[in-house]
Image (tube, rainbow, N blue to C red; front, side, top):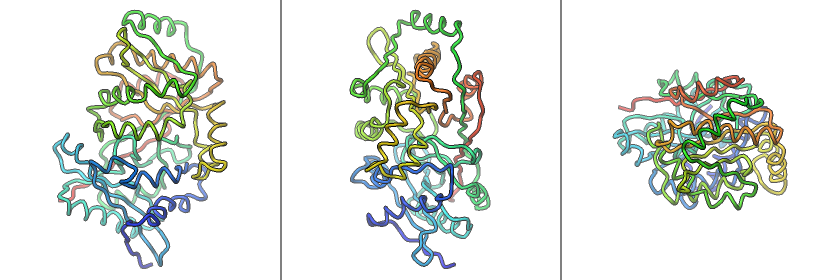
Length: 373
């Protein structure tokens, strides 16, 4: 095996980069493919406004012109300014089961980040916290949500052999949707009355759309101090609203306003699209969108994609309102299970909350780090 590392510079290289996992995971029952067109655009400055404040490069590992691995490296300058550290990120790492390939790819990312003055490499992390983040280290026999990740089991061993250490973990739960106790319903009403809160529900996507920017404003405040997070500017907000609103079923989105009609909290549930994305095979057209539309209408599983509560409301029981109101809709729609996306292992309050439901803790993702000095 004679491995050549080739920088991704042309659009046809980006296509190879995006399509490599389709070959790597072709026999996997659990890998959920992305939408190819969206993933290609996410790697192009022309379409992804993250390039305005991030610097990035991407590489392919080739064996006789056959792609056997890939990796990207990102410098998120606003995040580094926030934490006062020189951190580089590796992203979208994939390779065949060969540690030589893994080593060459990671060395390439490390060397470039070092040449840019970075002192630490962390990953897998994306351009921001709504991009690809974390490496699956537990739960290889479970289907991930479209907002989560699936990886080869040998990646963990490769990284540890190459000097990478754990930085932080995300954990995920599968919850059984059960009838809401009367006590919880009364508490829900009491909290709303005490703090003069109103819950907004939606039937049509067009009615939800005007709240898109307000949701991200709450998200910026709610997530401000979290690991890997930097606030989204208006261009990034526009980008995500356009990219994700088309996949939402508005019935599973709940917003909370205060007495001044100010948005203070939200929860976004999404009918599981994992099997639909598998059937779509990376393409919305001509038939991929049909599978997605079917999955959106009568779900048995709902993924809890994103929750945000303004800091000033986080100790007022608003999280209970969000969950109870969403649970009402899930019961009405015949949903049997819900899946959380990654929760930081240090978020003990959220973890204890989910453990109060009938649940399994079935997946774990990890961010690794290594000194470059």
